[in-house]
Image 1 (cartoon, rainbow, N blue to C red):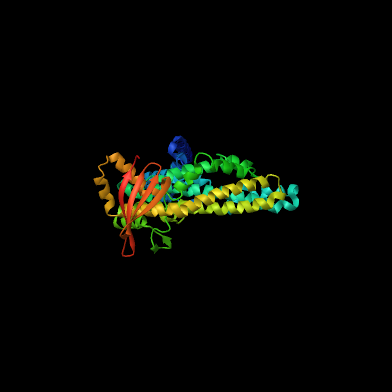
Image 2: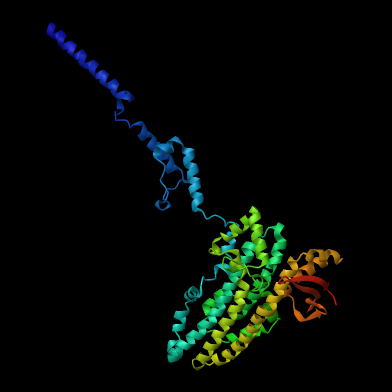
Length: 452
């Protein structure tokens, strides 16, 4: 009986166990596997990485940038900050528009010009291209090469001068403060565009209007002297050179004072004074002089380039004539080229002589008249209308840019230190007085006739 009960009890216990196992297997919670959960920082890391992988705008920083990526915990703490940094990184990699002054560096008459003649030779590959002619010219090759390089140096010199003029125009003249326009005119800087036009015309005759075509085609420069002579003798270019060589820049006799190894005339001294007294005006110069194309030069360095180029043209032509004559045996066109270049040299010397003698004296006279105490009073007493005053004042301020036909000097009887001078120009007649007092000469404008 007891064994039967024990057997029945065991059976019922097994059945209950089976039912409990069946219920546990059907319970979803029993299917979950227990694993070690990550720490809180690991969860933040996974979340941050998940956001980064889903965001197409986020890009890894390049090691070249030298910047460190934000830590994952910082990214999780402030996702908006990450996005702002990413946008900033994108902008840094995107080319920005040129700043207002950067168009100066990209100007074709500035960007395409090498820093010196050696760099020009390398850029044009002149040594290599001329070397290809060695077999043709054999023993005369060295003379041919020197002759051709002398011609190329004239081309480069004109390009370099045009570059300096363009920098002066782009950085200073175009942005000159309106309150000081009178100073700009006294300095003669309103003639800079005319100078640019003259040298552009000269370059077009020497190399053609396209530098790229010249670079690709130029090896032997033939008929160089013929082209230059034709340009000199056309369209009154000789007078334009005489008119513009001293249109701005320093006059040799303007002052005995020297500052910073530069001869400065009274107008430049006035400009220095204005810069010293006006912070905004001085700031304009400081910003312009700090531009990369200035290459540590100052305004006064560009202000003196025009007369320097007039003198340099004589030196370059003289060297070209000598080397062309030596190269006669090397090539057939060198003899004729030497003849034409010699004619050009004579013209260049005439321009230089005019500038160094008549032009300088006229410029000095203009300075003395403009800075005299009686100059402003003269126009008030002349009873001219405003348009005439502006035109005639500009003429007298720049007598060296006017075509002079003749001048006469009259000494007054009994007045040893007093004389009258008559100047006949194309468009006007000028009468001034000169008086010597205390070892100085004083000038006074007596008459200006615009029509005669």
